[in-house]
Image (cartoon, rainbow, N blue to C red; front, side, top):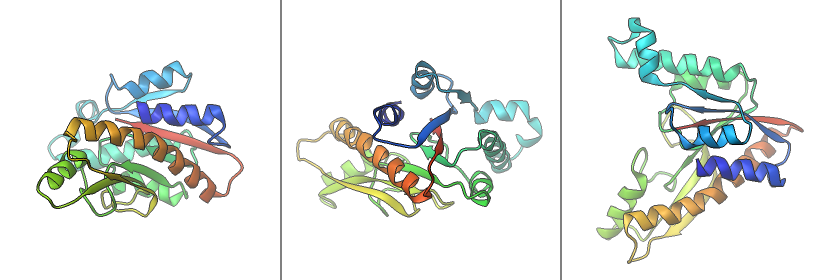
Length: 210
């Protein structure tokens, strides 16, 4: 929820202009992002893959088919709000072609925050994997990026890249703490740049949150 809060604060402070958050979406009922959104008066949506499967048993025999139909249904719900931009800020479910294509057809870009540099540590546990690589002597720094989302995971064009040197005394927990501090700056910059690239006078933003 802290990355979402950074976006909310930046909009309220005027650092992000010409934008409003039209909804925060989560696949976890207890997500801090939902709580923070509700406190800020922002509409929310809880939409969970397991619950979707229970409500649509015809898809449960094949997990790939289930995920594709969940993603397609999630895209339909997102598009009802008519956003101009989608921001994935901690949404851990990998969004597939079934989700991304309906947005792309309407010219709606989606951006994502990933705690690794481009081409490094794709997917989950990126910070812990970077720390392990440092311990093994393979790298001296890690970082993060805010990038446009494409079907390939964490492989879209970067909007923001920030390096973070790893210190010898860093534990995984300390590296995560310093990475999170950097994330709050990067996600605001990424949203600012994405809005600028849209060349619009008013932008509504949809925030999926894990």
